[in-house]
Length: 446
Image 1 (tube, helix red, strand yellow):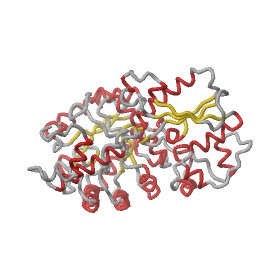
Image 2: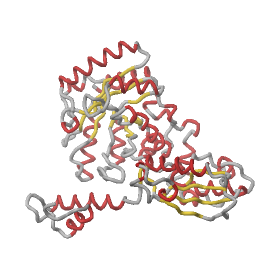
Image 3: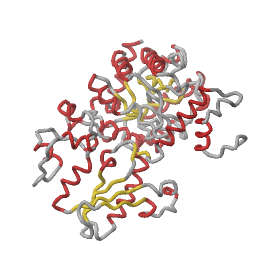
Image 4: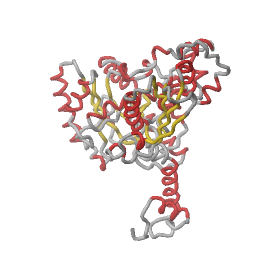
């Protein structure tokens, strides 16, 4: 305000002109950081998270279903592939009032009541209606679903008299490829090594191991979080509140940990083995690569999620070394949100992914797919390669409130995009299997 800057755009222009570095207490490094963050922010203004787009798509879908003219419809494009960032919500529609290949471009505000709270910030978000006819339904749905590079990679396609996606791939002598995987990357090479029937689904998850409670920065008690898991049919709940250095998140000091563990012991006694609460911690990875807390305290947990929350401006070499040192720590069970990115907001760490993944495999450290729709970190593009090498992932909601537990579905979507199978996911284990896993993992390393 003192500088007369009233918007992010004005701040960016101020930084581009080199005026930030001239302010007392600031320098060129801060100026470059401001520019990088704001340029990233503005470059992503035309996209929204899949989780937001999904809500818009459901309302548009209900609107189309209510129209007597619409004979058939389906979500398609990036939405059907469940991309993590969405530029437009696409629907394929059969409506006799429109010609095939006709495209109607609308906005959410034009289609829905944009005065309602959910749409105030998204009323200009685009919705595309692609029209077809019954005889071309399967063909147009198939072609509009796949990324153009995926469709091109399939070569010549004869879609006459084909009734399903499965038949199209069969005619090409290929295994069926689920819509989420049709990304135009390496799926045509990897698909022969993936059992389609075993690709992870939400229903195959048996529990969740990265969550927070009122002991740090969560909104609910451990019991309330556990009961929410039970209501969803899960068998176990792992608490992983923040460690002491995370003062901004009410990180737990040793005496708080002892109190929490006593409560967990009492709750588990009451559950009688029918449901298990595991004692975890989200231990900050310090700048040095060491974990927050000493060995004695770390030994008191069933498992440790090691995560970076600070000093995110390290270069690729230093950031990679920091992460690998944490992975090599014998107390590390799971590498949490590897880059600490926030989709469409913050790029996060640059890492040498091959080195980090190899270190996780060598040290028997699980790689987290943080299912918070703002994160989805580690990126699924790297996780596909990781599981091919033998890595295990964990789909964690990083829930800070009971309703956040169901965010695991967004992690499942991302895992399916990578073709990850259920047996490659830690929390598809039942409560006894994962209890045994934590115990043996600790015994083998500590």
